[in-house]
Length: 122
Figure 1 (cartoon, helix red, strand yellow):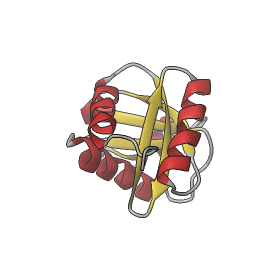
Figure 2: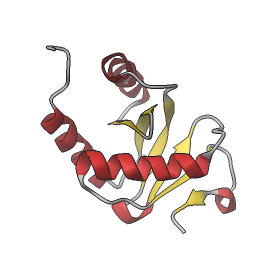
Figure 3: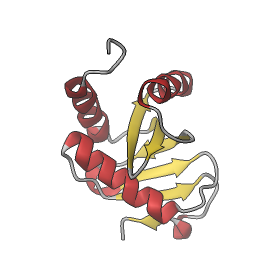
Figure 4: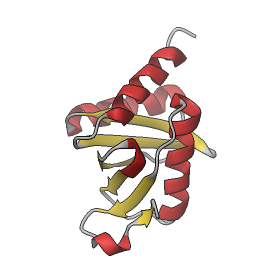
């Protein structure tokens, strides 16, 4: 299918984006136990790329937020509340490892939540 993204390109982009330590906007499109991670410098581009990835890849509800930190301490700050942040944290780590080959240590928290309420990376 011509619309399918090149997996090598997806992997290279994810590796590059995961290694960035400054603040980035992210979107996660869960699909089963895996999913797709999309990173961008601005919110508008992230939202457009996430919709395109969902249309191409399929998957569930798009989860958005801000990501910061090094590979050993990636913090995903969600825009909206998530029912199971512990599961999301494990899923983000799994997707990063399966798609890029990089192991990350992730923590997930909700925007406006106190630092003591973050889940993961313990």
